[in-house]
Amino acid sequence: MYSPTKKCHAESATKDQSGPHRRIDCACTMSEIFAQATLEKLLGKRRFTTELLSGGVSCDTAKVTWPPDGGAVVKRALAQLRVPGRWEADVDRILAEADAIELFSRITPMNVPAMLARNDQELAIAIELAAADMQDWRFSMLSGTVEPEVGYTLGGILAQWHTKTREMSATELPQRIINGKKRLYDLRAGAFYGGMAQTWPEYGSLIHELSDELMQSRECIVHGDFSPKNILHGPSGTWVLDFEVTHQGAPVFDLAYMSAHLNLKAIALHSQRDLVSQTLANFLNAYQHHGGMIPKNLPMHAGVITAVRVAGISQVNYLDEAGKASALSRSRQLLEGASVLIP
Image (tube, rainbow, N blue to C red; front, top):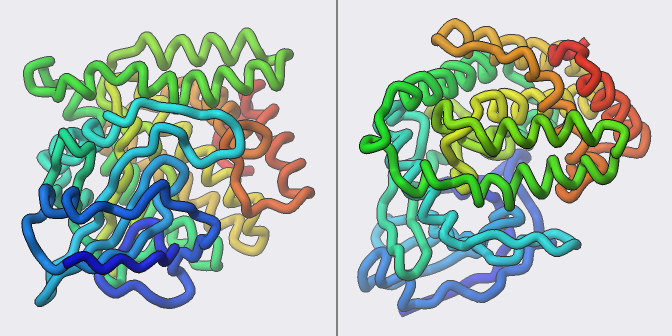
């Protein structure tokens, strides 16, 4: 039996999530309710109850539970992303996410959810529910709780992913990840960098150069969406989520993505600016401590990402007009070579 409930709640469901850090996003619209047949192919014949979740712009996502105490998060990719403009991407990116979870779980098994099931024909996956005390790190920060030690944890995780996969042969890496440049272009290099090169033509040459680096590099496996919204953190541990853009590429992108988002948080969180600054410093220090190297053009990449989150196709919703102006100014500083560390 299938019992759907159309609720729009936390992007990353926990076993019993509640409280001020729970994501409420009732603007989400699901393309369709998950079919009983899809759930049965993933999880077997059970009495399912589903709670539709806000899966961001790229996925249909549901918290699925069944008696007596079973549960999972089920995800299925969208062809047209949930943004005002036209933004399409191949739906097989959900299979790349499954491949990435399986890969990274071999490196840092405590920092990714377990893969419970995948069905490549249905383009759907089921992953482990997080513990109730693990909260969306973005919303924890925006509600005033900034823990700089989380930055150190994340820097260590990312360094291990980059250094370990740099050492792996092509036969040890999933082919979907190796061949992930189209996803990178559709979701990042084209949409973000290409879009900003048109919006800011005065930086067009530099931005195209940075985009070319992303498309040409095959240095290691890159997460592609390493930002606070994809982190769950709490007493039970720290998880990284959402691996749809994972590809073989340039490690600078992951560093820049987190750096850009923390720069934006510092603008939004006036009273916690110093704590956010320390969080970013901890992140970069831990990355180096665990064997990673900081590329010289990190600020420029961070500048592009900061700009696109304010003036591009994928804009944050937590900055007022003054904050947006500050963020655009900061973007230009970074593109012109300023330190990525928060002043």
